[in-house]
View (cartoon, helix red, strand yellow):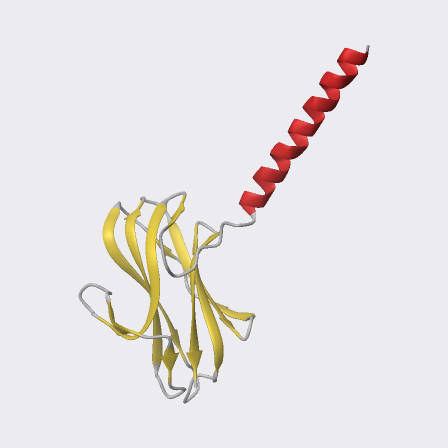
Length: 152
């Protein structure tokens, strides 16, 4: 009886430890702008912000993290090493910690490799409100790459 109790207690402790390890790793899945992020359906590289993109490739032109409030458009560009067909992506824009806009989702109609995916923020007024911003890409509804920038 004592031996059974010790085995059950040991198994319960192992299960609890396994749950803690799995739970802790699940909460540390957010990727910053540096490094790569792999989500089901896509392998993404670094995300950057820029005032311009190359219209032929969507590659960022002179990435920056500081913009004037007079900037007509701010681009968030993520390098995609691989995007599987059917994968959906969108960007969530936040100002001073508060989400205020989700971009229209884009859906891959074929396999894409080594491409740039761009999302953009365009003011409906004469200027973009000053503040501290973040933009985070979501892949099939799951958070992925994120970066921060400032509008002055």
